[in-house]
Structures are given as structure tokens and as C-alpha cells.
Amino acid sequence: MTRYDNLLATVGGTPLVGLPGLSPSPDVRLWAKLEDRNPTGSIKDRPALKMIEQAEKDGQLRPGCTILEPTSGNTGISLAMAARLKGYRLVCVMPENTSAERRQLLGMWGAEIVSSPAAGGSNEAVRVAKGIAADHPDWVMLYQYGNEANALAHQEGTGPELLADLPGITHFVAGLGTTGTLMGVSRFFREAKPDVRIVAAEPRYGELVYGLRNLDEGFVPELYDESLIDSRFSVGPRDAVRRVRELLDVEGIFAGISTGAILHAALGQAAKAVRAGESADIAFVVADGGWKYLSTGAYEGTVDEAEERLEGQLWA
Amino acid sequence: MAIEVRIPTILRTYTGGEKAVTADGSSLSALIDDLEANHPGIKERLIEDSESGQDLRRFVNVYVNDEDVRFIGGLEAEISDGDQVVVLPAVAGG
Image (cartoon, rainbow over all chains, first blue to last red; front, top):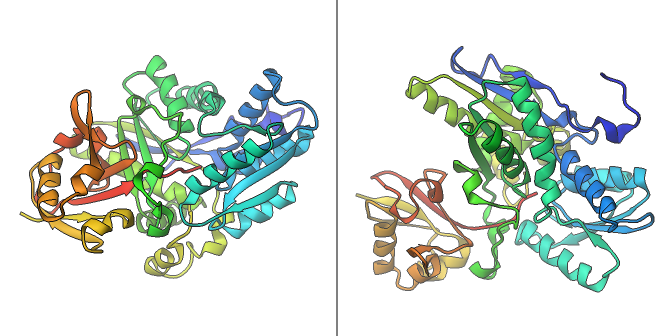
């Protein structure tokens, strides 16, 4: 079925694509879930739409309402598209060290942007947004970091789609940001196929982003439940860039930088399976396409140059 | 035995501004004790008392060769010569 009533109805149902060139052997295979095929080009269309629908159902969101959200970009872009179609005003709080394209896209769909300081990254955006929410009690903050509808979108969508397309799935690898993707997909598999290993790839940024005033100002999303994850890896910009270029060179997939980090962790699991002499079907998330990151310089010049250019940027 | 430990900006007051220091220990908890011997005060910033004895503080993440120690034994995680340990504060993504 490829006919839909409107754009929002096309969210999800993304292709799962085999990677014969990057898979180490016919017994240990990698599969890419192309979430860039969602309407605004990222996996965030799933939670954004679900959070809005849930808030409408609860009576929290009514026509003419203003939505407020702290976001480093993709969630904001997804919300902006849905808000435009549904007639809501959207205010996004975004760290100033995010790519220019994300700001342009948000503006195109009519979102207003409040910038938060670069130092502290998304922690600061969350803090600033909470302050604005207190000043505007009539605005609706969907709050992706603590909104169960975020995880639910993946429990009901991404997870079942993966199992249907890859019944022999052994590993699922995704990025760790709000933790919604991993929490939701894990909840689905813990029920449906409990032996699937759930692996998190967490972007490791430059020092500026960790510039907190003290450790008590750290942030763990309210959605996060450690018991739903089997392992968690920190991936720096160098490995992310190297892998995102490999994905393009070997398989022709043009993905965003965070997908490089996810692929790095997926290849680590593949190597482990090979060493153990086990077969594996490893599905990982292509969170978005590379378009929004062209201005970061991640795809040009040497890996050293790209790594240097990403220093201090929120590249995932 | 020498293990490189990367220290985040906010804890460098304990390492005289050094970004990375070396320490010894066959487990994370032994490594942190060794760190404390040379950089007094740092242990208290990394570890807190918990129901089960001691645990990493909630907003402290420690990685051994890029893997989060909470999934490989926590404070009992094994560490060997040449491993790289990274300490980072927990930050938001998304």
C-alpha cells in the first residue's frame, strides 16, 4: 500500500536494507533501518507525531495551542511539520552550536527558535525550556526526554516492523539521545523475542558540550531505564565520521553523522559475533540523511580535518 | 601497569588541570582508589554510597575502551594494562 490520505499518514513503515559489503560474512549480517525515509527525513517523525496525538487525546493540546520543546534539531523539525499541518504554533529551544541547516528547516516550517548557550549542549536547552514553560503555563511542553509517547512510538512501530522484516534478528543498535528509540524497541523485543541484544551508541562530543558547572547539573532522561539495555558504547566524532563515509562508499547510503556512531557500535557487535563463531542478524538505525550536516564539513577532506571541524558542535 | 584516565573539565581541579592522568588497578574500584591517592578528593566526586554499598554517581559515566562500565560490572569492571578509561558527565541528546 503506497497511497496515503496525507503526509502524516506516511510516518513509519521504513525499509530495512541489507549491507552485503559491510557485513563480515554471510552468517553475520548487518541491516540498516532507513529512518531518513520518514516525511521530514528523520526517525524523530515517529515520536513527534505520537507525542502530539497523545496530547490531543488527553485534551492537553487544543487548536491554536503553542507547543514548546527543547531540541537539538530533528525532533523540532518533525514537530514543526506536524504543527504546521495541525495548526499549532511551535517554539523550539535549541543550542546555538547546532548546524545551520537545522535552523533553516525549522524556520521553513514556521517554528520559532529560542537559542540556548552552546556550553552545556542540550542540558542547557532543557534548562532554558523549563524556565520558559514556567513563564507560560498555557504553553504545552511535550518534553521528549520524559514523554512515554516517545518510547511508545517505537514499541508500537519500529520494533514490530523490525521483527516482521527480520524474524531472525539477534541485535538492535540505535543512538542514545532521549533514549526513546532504545526504550521502546527494547520493551517490544523483551516481550516478543527476549534474546535480542539491545545496544546503545552514545555520541561523545567535544569538551565544550560537557562544560557543566558541576556534576549535579548532569542529565539522564526520565525515560531511561538501564535494565532495558544490554551494552552501551561511547563513540567519538572520529569513528562516527569514518563509519559514515564507509557507509556511503561501500553501500551507497548517505546518512547523518550520528548514524556513523551507530554503525561503529553495530560493526563492533558483528566483529564480536565473528570471533565467537556465532551467526548474527544485526539491525541498526539510520537516524537521518546527511543533508543537514553538509555545512559541518564532515564529508569533505581528511578524517582529521572533519574531526577538527566537528569539535564543539552537537553533531548528533 | 599503566592505564590512561581521561578527566572531564569539571574534575580537573583535582588533577592540576591535566586532561589525562595515569593510574593503576585491576578493577575500576581499585583504579579509583589509586586516582584518589594521587588526586585527593576526586573519589568523592565519582562515587557515592548506595543500598548495595558504593556506586557511581548518577550523573557520572565511566567508559573502559568506549564501553559504559555499568554494563560490564560497574565498579567491579575488570581493567587491564593499555585500556583507556574515560570519565564524562551525563548530558542530554535528542
